[in-house]
Length: 313
Image (cartoon, rainbow, N blue to C red; front, side, top):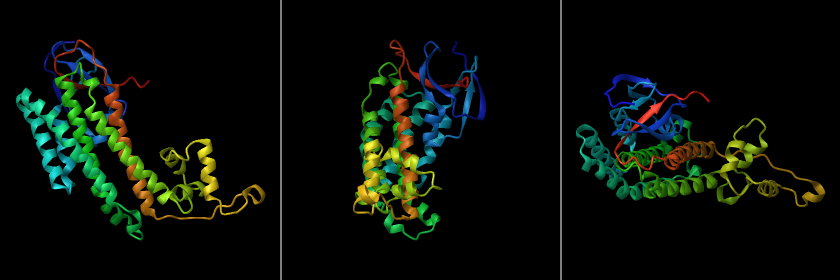
């Protein structure tokens, strides 16, 4: 593999199976695979990217295209402090890509570490502010608008963490697999998101009348299998027994059997649950990317993100 400057291919679309790699700029060699585009790029809604084509079907991701997508993420952020912090992080990385300023790359990493708790707090505040009961009777359009601040805050948070880790793999590819700050922030975000999802599926811990129960007893509803794994209390065999027991409306199930009353929670509970799962999957994809990063121990030079079309296996 050489270091020749490749020709550009504009707005080529990545498939979900496109593989992502780091490249050692000193030798031109590819480092171990980071993951798949479906796990990584979709977390920041990158649908089309500008790419450079290299020999042997190896492709180098254009940093400018990544910046363009990340730049659009916080457009609807309502928290001005987060907009300012996000802009500072992105501008630092843009200065690095435009002028190859090593100190701007280090500043990007430092700002991500410093500002991550602010994004975490913003996420917690948005989660606490949302109560599906308040939106009972809202149209879907109005409900979506009410949930939009949560979506935009979460996606900006994912984008910021992704950019921080990407900057780290460029600066310190040999030690990036040992970083703990970004991984810790991802885990904190997942903790509060999963807790909110459990509360949404079974509000107040009461199974009767809950979204989880309504999807179980409705044979035309296919969401139960999707929701159940996110409520750990009921996902095991004994947990499922507890779910049925708590839903039972009869006094003596051992004698008279089990009866479950029909229930129909607000559609807003379902909209929030679906959005939370979408956000959780984004953070989980980023977590998988972080944990799967295993560069060669000797790779001390900077690296750039590269992609390689998968074989389809």
